[in-house]
Image 1 (cartoon, rainbow, N blue to C red):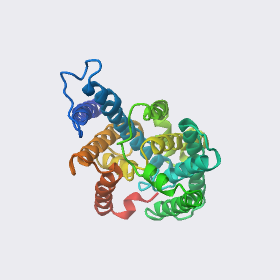
Image 2 (image 1 turned 90 degrees about the vertical axis):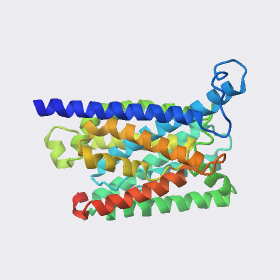
Image 3 (image 1 turned 45 degrees about the vertical axis):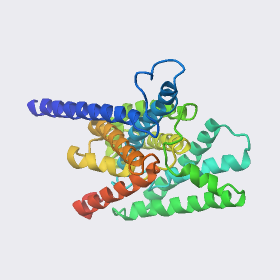
Length: 331
């Protein structure tokens, strides 16, 4: 009993620390940019500082928080239901599927709205993620590296179809410019679709215990009374919905849903129900730090966040590989 109370107090302290760190980084994010905000005028009607704050800085910071929180959590869910620590939306074709759906909507529906594009991206991402999970169930040998390699192969095939459509219909440059992850266009009137992620996050917390049990395997979870297929399908829907929304607004953010859950699990274990909020908060802090690096490294210009997240994430990914023996990740 005392150990359980100590564990709860420890996790509460960690969450409080992460929330405080995220709040401080958010305030720093609001203050940094090519144009300086005069805070004495920031809340006065008609001033440039007010327009800059409410039309650009606040939407960008909110986008960072939602994207970091959402992408990290769906990465954790994906790893749990696939029972592989190296699986994430970017290594299983989910993001590539969302990009294909958006490309199809642009090709065949000339006056498609942003919301409709997101729906196309969601359906396509769900289909590709379902294919990946079907192939995964058919595999006899689910080794640590083999599964994500399979996902990368599937994602490459889907990306090649997307590139073919973009090349044939002459919007290749526009498509790649749009899909390359960057928060520079997360402004008022364009970022609001990310709010649709919030209900999916509530669903993720609601089913956290079910996802934890599903990670034990189909036979074991079924014996415990869990409807394994329904829980996995709910997880796939959540993964596709979040991937589609983030791709529409921000683009592809590599490694975020891969390294953050792994880093948290190294110190917090593999209980998804206990770790889900810590993973989300850690993802927020990680993406805020990467965004600040993007905006300061060649100030007053900025780098795409996909570049910085990719470099840092790749280093962390290699660290995880060398830190853990391959047998530790086998399913």
